[in-house]
Amino acid sequence: MSEYIVSARKYRPTTFDTVVGQGALVKTLKNAIGSGKLAHAYLFCGPRGVGKTTCARIFAKTINCEHRTKDGEACNECESCQSFIEQRSYNIHELDAASNNSVDNIRELIDQVKIPPQIGKYKVFIIDEVHMLSQAAFNAFLKTLEEPPKHALFIMATTEKQKILPTILSRCQTYDFQRITNQDIVAQLAYIASKEGIKAEPQALQVIAQKADGGMRDALSIFDQIASFTGGELTYQATISNLNILDYELFFRLTDAAIQGNIPAALMMLDGVIRRGFDPQHFIGGWASHIRDLMVSTDPATLQLIEAGPEVAHKYQEQATKCSPQFLYYGLQIANECDFNYKNSRNKRLSVELAVCRICQIMHPLPPMASGPQPLQSVKPQQVAAQPTVAPQQAAPQQATVQQPVQRPTVSQPVQQPAVAQPVQQPTPQPVQRETGNRFTPQTGMAPRRMASIRGVTSSQSATKLQDNSSIQNNVELNEAVNPTDLLAAWKQFAVENAGEHLLTGLMNECVPMPVSADNLKYEVTLMAEQQKTLLDSNRERIMNYLISKVRNSRISLSYVVNEATQGKRMFTSREKFQAIKENHETIVSALSDNFNIELA
Image (cartoon, rainbow, N blue to C red; front, top):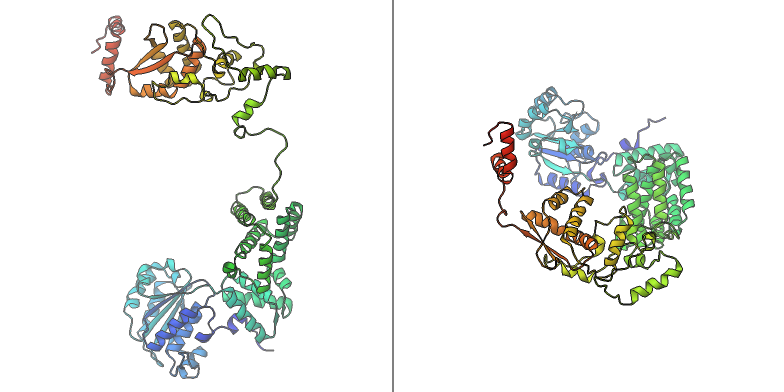
């Protein structure tokens, strides 16, 4: 019985032409060899299993070959090539930096660099996983790497280029190896299967290529594993069963159920996946990838982005015609959000089930609720005003009152007020544009605003306050005689009822309106600073409507005047503040000085 060799070693490339998926890079190396323009240091970087070390060995063998072919390949027949193939060459040295990363190991390598090659022109040193070298080892290697002997050539390979010192990178020619495409991996696997006499379905090879994630060595290892599991016959079902991968047919059925809005069927598919031992996150991630493939299948220009065989790609195109753009975009967004928030969810299965339900409702949204509380912001003002809150027999008189012009009452005719015992019959205060608002807005240059912004009237206030404002809201002009004492009492009462607003309350207690007209309709408040005027102006509408409701006269006006003598005069030091107190309260300061026998200076 012959010795078994894994496919990753048995079919390892030995020439540049057999390297898979690195065409541009291989061409560059062959041109450099053909022209004789070789650098003294190379850095091969890229993901695992893409051919970095393999290309380094082929490069080392080729530059020492005595009879290269016309296309720049090694002959594999000369003494140098034979010694390399039989692993007895003294011209090529390999160092694993993961296990030989000390300064002593680098010093041994430097000693070997001084010895010229016995056969061939170059002595090649291949350092694998060079990023594992210690800081001291890198520093010891710098001088030799910068000025090596003419016969020395260094090839370093790494998967993490960012860990290498910039001083090392600047002394090397860097070659970035790319991931091998699924098409190249499938083609190589099909070639190996034919050489080994293994029957392999194209869909099975496609699954292996996707699982390998761009690494040929990983793909060959998976290929050997499944070949042993199936006894030399690779089928799609056996492959997904061995690799514990969800079948793409499941996602086709799941998407069909979502398009039809069949939530129970979708949830049962999820339950079956979980019962088979799959993680729910694996399920939602696979569905997100499926929806992504459907989205790129809608346009022939992006169809090539699907990493699947022709038959599967055709299925994606057929199902994509059933999906609306909204389903694809929103479905992909919902699945991606669920996958992103999966780890932070306490009930992980519920989060996935909720995502499944939301995707199923994209094309079949649920009807709105027939009854139940509606959000306040969704109700329009005119809709609220149109809803009667009184008995049916009372609705007609109220409607007539709105349609007919309202007679303005005089001072001798008091306004008829609704009964206090029936506050619920009044509609909820709504925004109303008042003509009388223009009578006090010109002083501030403010446009009339809606009465609904009056924050002084709240649901917690008594029904009497609501009745007092009802006449204002119904566009009834009030014209009772104004008593300055009543207006001042209303001003103070407003400050008491808004005690939570400390700045406004303190200012209103300190500054009071004074009448400036004979009919007591014009009032003026003298302030000390412009900031106080700004504060009162911002609350003008609240204050005015409150005063109007109390004095029963909608013709009053209120203006704020800043005392020019006090404007801009601010006290900063403690002495300035004390002097102001002494000037304004001289009697109290003198009494304190006399009673306590202290001198206040």
